[in-house]
Length: 190
Image (cartoon, rainbow, N blue to C red; front, side, top):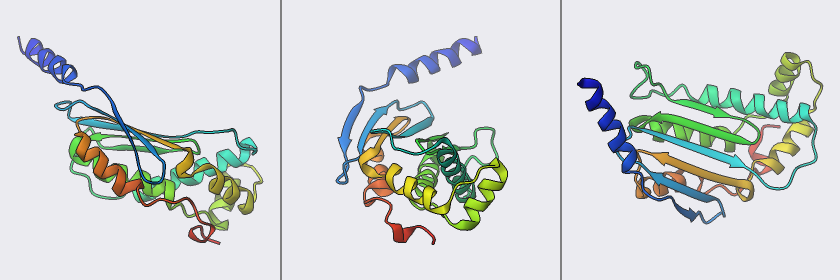
């Protein structure tokens, strides 16, 4: 009997999913939101797309490792569910970032992911660390150039789905990405 009640609740949460709505931020980032109130979780995917950039796999791997480490370091914030089994998950690579979190933790997790993409500490120490761990030989200049060309608002698309209203998603997307103009060379450690 209890299984039936839980199953019915799960079906009910899925039935309330609204049709996706899209909008653009002032910097050109397209955002798609699919509300599913009652689900309890929120998911976001940030895709970095566009024409293929001329780089090699080692540079892409180095940037992915630096972004992932930055996300890990920035995720040391306190989440409401940090003591529960459903701790927020944030992942960042050179071509996408993802967040999965309980509704009450989503904003903080989304901001961690946004910060990792936009404010990465790309310096010689990080590049040396990545070169050592991957047994590659990429230069700081190669990684910085690829980052500045790859991770930009004009190449970014965001999808947010789950237990979040359109108004909440718009406000959060604006807060996290609305002022982003790109990765100025000055914002990256020399």
